[in-house]
Image 1: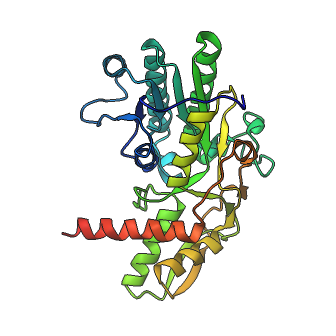
Image 2: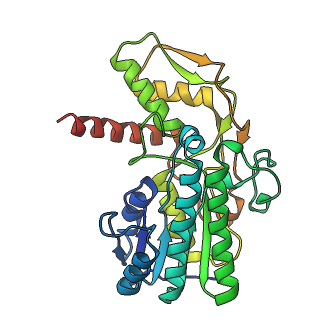
Length: 318
């Protein structure tokens, strides 16, 4: 619906998962709108507790919900804890979506992930590629849960007439990212590796595999901008890709990170480690047609992420 508009002025917007990287970026973005932002901490509300979630949403009465809460992690974490990733994400999204419906919340935006798409989907990946082939085995548990979230929004929309939509962000990075090497994604892992190599005056740093796979990255603040744009201007059954529109090889990304961090050593490749999917670039034609495009280039975004990492290192060492 190209002429759809949803005015945020005076609205009560509940951001579930406000402490995460995307959630905190959403808080920054929504603070520029004339709306009331609702949040709740984990100590106050367990999103896995259906009764508690229903009671909190019934009491808080949001006009709209942005569902950014999720259990997330990299390949190692997904492989090690498949039951946790599938169960917890299914329960969180089911609890919030059903509670929103029961509390007469008419507008909801669910955040998925680009891992919902088939491992060998045609590039760039269009929204229509969903459920057309097998998933990447290393993170299929998380992907299945996110696909279920999309389908929940579609089902509630079809059965109850509520305006629930879904957005599929590409690989995200930025302030608030996870820098634990056991559970982090590629950009924070590379930033930490490069920083520690620089501090130790190491002769080199290492990446997994050949470095030839291509990946797309979007800064969290650009993602938040796109999500608010969708909340204000999109109503439809099909999910919408949120991407940068360009990709880069892992080797080139690693060298760019090394340059931003200031590490001048060599780059080594551990060829015993897997490469993963050869390429994963999403088409963002649908979102661009709605009048949105990213503003933060990769180098500037990496510099911003590194500044945040350094500030966290400094505060944690005090």
